[in-house]
Image 1 (cartoon, rainbow, N blue to C red):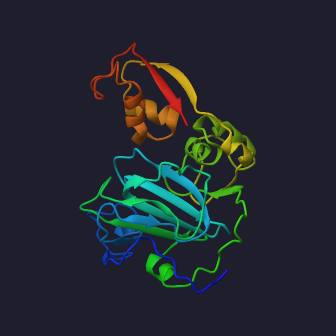
Image 2 (cartoon, rainbow, N blue to C red):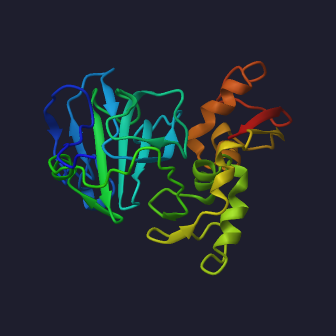
Length: 269
């Protein structure tokens, strides 16, 4: 396999609209007000490409805030991770745990989430530390795996926003399987809600990823609950409330007005 191939994050040539680590505290609330990636002025609908061989560690199809629709991929050797934010579309066939190849189309650019205009936000981590995505894109891809190799991740380094249910959904196919990850890390985790950024967690039984079917549960709404709070409880992220709304449109006419006693169907996947 040639090692002189420079990775591309999107089809075509477009300029940088916001540089890595640019200081803008009014916009960036983490990293001391610094931009944790590079923004490219890519028009909506531009095909986005995997910048290394690896696998999909996270997908957000319904997220309405932050990075909006997003895909996170991790390199085959586990050293690199890339986040694609503000997408308009994600390949329908793509799911957490899938292998991807350098140059593979993963979706299209857009303007979803907290965004002031169409662009691609690209963040890159090396060994858990942020790096300048442009530096990465300007060096040859030296970590391509031989074709046909199956990549089975067995460890995950915790980043901001991770939860056990979210990791279970990404790695094991169902957020309901979070107790398996908790049990596999009982030596370092005392409570399910105490995972910390930087911890390296063991991921058990990854081979079940392709066989787990979505789980359907019934939930009776209690006083004071919202679709966001129910999504946080069952799906691991309050931002996934729209999934519950779409499933229950026949009885929920206004997502802001759910009534105590309603019985909602929750599809856990």
